[in-house]
Structures are given as structure tokens and as C-alpha cells.
Length: 285
Image (tube, rainbow, N blue to C red):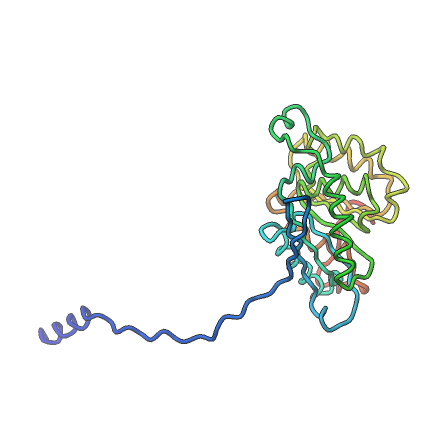
């Protein structure tokens, strides 16, 4: 018995023989899209990232274009490209070319006013969204139209400050995009100045340019400004207001992006009711 125990202890203490490492084939890169460097202004280059829908290479079809603000590779490009792919796979939304436009100084590029006194001190570069719109209109959109098979239909999506930019663009230059989706837009900026200006800016120019707006409950001050905006929108046809008190500013984008894409690019045939794909609006759009 003692001899058996000793043998077992010796075996336990003996070093294990190195196991051969299995040989694997060379890894294949996963290609999600294409990235184009584009000059925003002298010395300032931006990523313009493009996702092509499944079948694009072989179908010969033309596709709508979804422009994504904050569309850098380290921003929201992968998330929205994935939501678009999943939506088209389930027949929830049309397949689309996704064009992500990188931002760098978001307050300079996505906000149209310099802000109140406190904000001007904290963010001295803020308030140049018109230049970013010019970049999209004069550089990005012509590039996309000349390099990809586009159907002529397009839309734009973005969250937070990008959502503010989208609401401002819909109000000031609605013809820039066909349809709009603003998720949790930062309308608190400049003490809600954009929401206060909205009644004077909404008119015939916005007709035919649908708008989806989604927000969570961020407190009384935020909601007061949001109610000003929705009150101004109340007489406009073709808008959708999705209130989501069940999520937060950090989680709303993932929660509502599939619904927003369904609103922007509805499928030719209604999805099967069993899937529960329905755009939840405060009013019919």
C-alpha cells in the first residue's frame, strides 16, 4: 500500500509533458465595409465608412443610403451597420448602404449655436454645425452618389449631440436628407434654444421629409424642452415620437435603432405580426 501511494505521489509531482499545439490555417480577415479618408478642411481628414448590404456585389440593384452621424469606426458605425443588416435579414427594413461620417470636435460640428454663457466658457469651439452640413452636402453625398449604386432615397440617423444636429438640419435644411431619425437629441443645449425656435422654422419645406424622434425621461428640465419641440411638431404630418421611459441615455440607441430603421426604410411588405415589428409612435405617421 505504501509503495502504491508513493508511486502515485511521484506521478503527481512529475511535470506534465508538453502537449502539441494544434496547427491552424491562417486567419482570414473579417471585412465589414470600406473606409475612405476625406478632407474636411485643410489638414483635417475624416473617415467616411461604408457598409454595403448583403448581395450588393451581385444583385445589380440600387439601394437607399443611410447616413450615420458619429460614424467613425470607434463610434457608432459597427452598431448601425449591424442593425441595418439584421433589419433587412428579418424583412423589418429595406437593405441599405450605410455611410458613417466620423466626427471629432462634436460640439463644434454638431451644434448650431455657441451656447449660454457657461457653455461658451466650457466649450469655446461650439456652434459651427453649418460647416459640417456643407461637408456632407458638397463632399460626402456627391462621393457616395458617384461610387455606389444608390436609388435616390436617403435618410440620416444619430444620437445625443448627433441627434441635435439632425433635428437642427431637419428644421434649417430639410432637403439635405429624405428622412430623419434623431435619438435622444441634446435639445437642452443653449437652454433649449432650438426647441424654442422650432415653431418659426417648421413649414412647407419639411413636407415630405419624415422625422422620427425618440427619447428617454431625463428629468423635468429636459422634458420641458422636449415638449416645446413636440408641440411645434404637432401640426406636421409624417413625424413619429417614441417616448421610452424604460431606457436611459446610455441604452436608448441600441434599443430603438431597429425601429428607427423600420421607420426610415419601411419594407415593401409588412413584417409578419408574430415578430412584433411595429413602430411605436405617439401619433400615426
